[in-house]
Structures are given as C-alpha cells and as structure tokens.
Image (cartoon, rainbow, N blue to C red; front, side, top):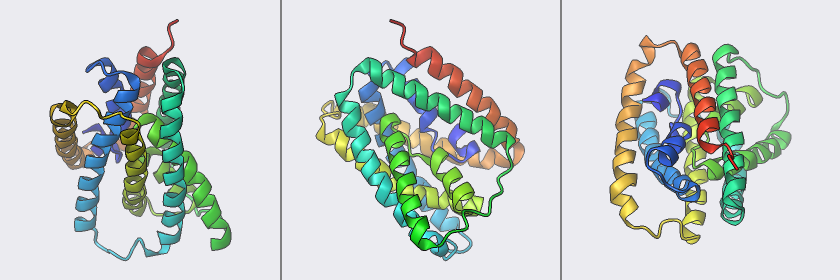
Length: 248
C-alpha cells in the first residue's frame, strides 16, 4: 500500500521487514526482495499499459529508456557480484547508507516541486548520460533488492524533462531488466538454494504487494502525496538506522 501511495514498488520498505521481522540474513533478504520486486513489476507494467490513455506517449523517451536499461543491467550485475564478495558488516553499512539516502530523497520529493525542462542537449549527449545514470541505478537496485523507481523517476523528470506520469511507466520498463539482471546474478551465486522460499515467502508476499499497490493507488486521491513522502522518508531513515547500523 505504501508503494502504491507514493508511486514506487515498496521494496525499500520491504527490506527492513525481511531483516527485522522474518529474520533473514542480509544477503538472502536482498535476493528475496529482488524476487518479490520482479513479481510486483510485472503486475504494475501490465496494469499501466492496460490503462494508458496514449500508448505512443513513451516514444520520445525510448532512446533515453534504452540508455538507462543498458547501464542499469551492467550496474545490477556488478552490484550483485560485489554484494556477494564483501563482508556482512560492509554490506550492512552500504544498505544503511543507501536506505538513508532514499529516505532523504523521499523527503526532498515531498517538499520540492516536480518541474524541469531537462538538459538542453541532443541525443548524442543524452544517451551517454542515460547510460551512466543507469549504472548507478542498477548498483542501488542489486545492493538493496529494489526496483529502483525512487531513482529512475527523478532521473527522468529532472534530467530528461519527462512528464511525471509517463516517467512512472518508463520507470517500470527500466526496472524490469534491471531487477532481472541482478536476480540472475544472485541465482547463479546460490542465493536461492532454499526452495521453500518460493512458496513460503516470494509468492505470498508478491501477491500481497500487488494487492496492496492496487489499494494504495485507490487511496491516492485522499492522501497528501507531499506529506506522505516526508513522513515515509523519516520512517525509512529511522528504521534503517535501527536495523542496519553496525553495533560492534
């Protein structure tokens, strides 16, 4: 519901729950988060394409979307590989840093108007810029197990001047291959050797996320988006510090 209310997949809030409530080790929690994110993204894309009033509205953004996807696939693959090699304490610090950063970004989005004409450059410069941004988005996605919409949407709006509603659909298109790339890397690294996770957590939590996202979308007209983002940003920062802070 939180994801549906603020226009994200909710994975940034799911990770602390997987760690603190279900007690999963951090690497396994990240991999499971990616798997649930993938199910949520498939459902979100299906709904968005079905209700889209203009299927051609994405066409001007396709080169930028392609650049973001190319960079994010590389970043997600590298990020998942990096997460499997570093110590648990280092991974905790990275997760804490990134979650606090996302919380601050949510607060900023809640108080800063969404208006930007985008960079005044041609395609020759916009494509490399999209690829570089994609690498960073992919890294964050695979290190946290998130879809990356909290970074993709501001990138499309502020850097490339996309309409906020179109950016939401474009974000899902970029997130799908990004999450899939990170997920494949985690599978190859043995993160899903426990087959019971599929039926015990991934499928039910994925189904719950889809239903919750729909309910959150229904509640959007009745909730102040700005105040909600500020409140949720604070909650995310506090929960991240409490759960992932190194206490040695």
